[in-house]
Image: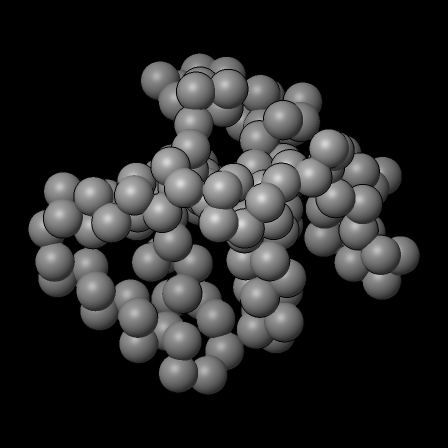
Length: 138
């Protein structure tokens, strides 16, 4: 990953070998005009460090994790909170928080369980382009 080890206010941890997760990261990067997010794979030492003193275990997750100002968000809470910071109409999706978390997470978990079968997986974590390297934490 990149040489950048400075952790910003919003760090999105994602499954680095999941094609859906990598596509989602690309989607976010394209709509994160303020560059509010940094990224790191759940498989990285950065993820281990960020989640060390929390009940969240990266190796047990089938979810993205958003660390936002030292608060931890997982599953649908993380996904919806990300939309809050995106450019354009995407921030409207944050309104889906009105639905109970249990219902939102049921849908999230269904997709997460099938993500490798539907979208495939890579053998190793993504390597960012030189232009994006600073957004990925090492």
